[in-house]
Amino acid sequence: MRAVVQNDKNRTRLRWLALCGGAATLAAATLLSGCAGPESVRTASGQGGPAQPQDPAARRAAEHARLAAAARRWRLDQVPLTPPPPPAVKPRITARDGFEVDHQEDWDLPPVFTTVPTRDKVVFLTIDDGAEKDPRFLAMMRELKIPYTAFLSDYLVKDDYAYFRKMRSYGNTLNNHTLHHPYLPGLSYEEQKDEICGMQAVMKKQFGKAPTVFRPPYGNYNQDTLVAAKECGIKYAPIWNEEVFVDHWEYREDDKRLRSGDIVLTHFRGRDDWDGTMVDDMRRFLNKVTREGYAVARLEDYL
Image (cartoon, rainbow, N blue to C red; front, top):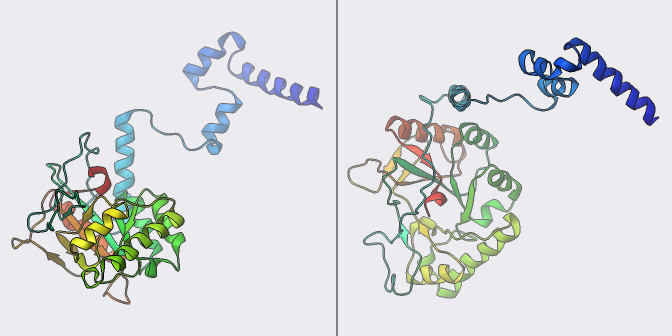
């Protein structure tokens, strides 16, 4: 049987040699006429995957065309801007003025901040809790290559961990938002620690890693919150400077404008809570930040 198979292979190669001008000219024919043998034909025909442009400019043009088509498909006003590469030297993150607690520095507690210090014209999208699990949202953000950070509460995500595993497989980060989303300053230190460390354990079990980033529910915290968070392995406690809803924006600053490095909050919500979907919410978010010249970057790339 081996001899028959080998003879068939030899006859196939001889036919290709004849078509390309014989063995002596095979290499030249391969380069000049693209006659590269059956293996290359299989690849070119799609069995080895689609051919990709080798020229960097051609690759960029092809990717821009793909993004433009995706922007039209999701009814955006413009193609979202591409963020710069992550900074080689990470910015120093400190607590925002007025957001510190006693012993913030000397106990090295996780800083609470609303904006990352950067000159890059970027903002960071963060999405809280996990109530709505819209597959169209996953598709939209993946096609548009928009990074985001999810802050999850277990009581809302435990019915569908697989949804968030898929989100993570697309390159997005999952972080801690407590087990039950309580008002933490109203709890004792031990109760707060149970909420934060308990969610750390869930995330390690379900997603393979305990995060180092935590957002206190409602943006409310006290010294016990940050001490407990540190005990649970948390290094950063970002909150937000703007919040986007399906029909409006809200701002922390009186001038109501975006700034480089701002953290933007939204929630996993749908028509049960809003007059629209998460896709509608993301359309409002992306249209504004793109119109104002901001790209959406990954928060963890700057931490």
